[in-house]
Image 1 (cartoon, rainbow, N blue to C red):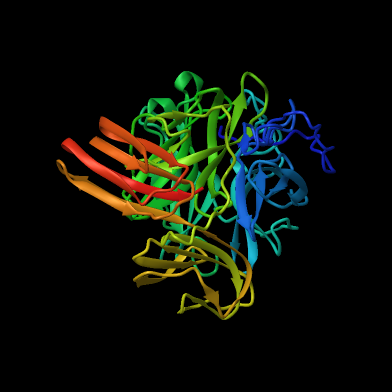
Image 2 (cartoon, one colour):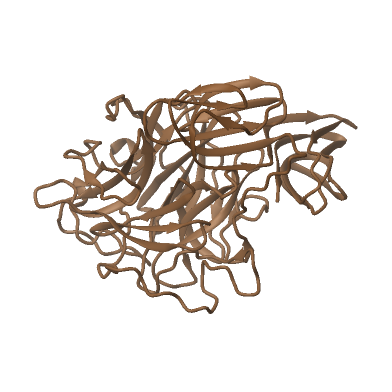
Length: 526
């Protein structure tokens, strides 16, 4: 039986009392500004905040998680300090398909409304065995279906659709918008096709395209089905590939999925990759890429960006020590040559940690740096981006994302790539109502470059303020940012991070004996 854990039935009906001033999980610590430690959302010894999902809208973050009879929401402006914002969806009335065990909510903003993808079922005889978390303890597992609820605002109230979105056993939906604006839905199913090769019961992830009416086209494609030993639960009698979250980089699609039993320490994250959404998909490794450390059982994550608008963070659940209930944690996500890496920049597989880390960064604009990332919420029929007119349409707000590396500018509206222009650019907007905007000095080269011996490649920067860079190197190379120098000598990609407090004219990478491959160069003003 697959499950999705939830809050206990004694969920608060009003905002919790303010925490004392003493250090607490998920807070910025007195005397140590700019740092935090996991978990960022605890809730106490009885709370279980499984399957967290974070939506950013108009500069605020909204966190949703599974519940036995309802979905609770929290609000934050920095991804670290969360305030309870109420119950935004409850189970439907008698006779409806979605009454209990509301699992894995993901909320997207589409065409001026908020759409929550969430699984649920009808009351039945559930099973309470869920390891260190709440499990399926009151619902009919055979009737579990993926559905949709809709609302005019991020905090609801959400209203259920009359019928489920998927007609078979299904959970863990993840909506995805491609560069061309097409919409897709990844979700989890359990049937004879998702069994492990040894015949053991299992569940797996598929993807289907979403039609103009919001319904699925009915042509699901296999993305991640049970195949690896680590994906089994205790005893190896059942396997899980679930909780999909898909990212696109270097023209490829990377689905990060959770495997193993959610109620134990073996729960972890793997990756499946494809050149097309319709496959074929292939797992990148027989081992997980994000595993237990001081925080155990990390998984069912989502990826959001810091207040600077570009730096990616994974929000996931896991257990602290031997305590009960999944708590919500936050760790930075990096791109490391051949895939995503969660953690502190160590070689993969990375592990979740309780160590202190910097709070997610805010935007910093250095006018001396040509590269920038602009992120704005705008309203109007069109918007002019440094003189380039882009159509918007509709009377609701749109998310506008503009990136320039100094030689090419790209423009996205509501996640779709709508325009590209060669040449330098400036972060100027006109012709639309700007509800909120940030500009951040940022350069991101997602390409892969081969350096011979002693070939050198440089990425211009030019700022005099603090700058941070990350770069993935395979082979032998010297990496230099300002006065900071690191030599790399390895076979697979190694993630190198450097920081200069006085800026740098450029990042330089020099191939040493045998040369190197260089990928995922990112520079940010800090």
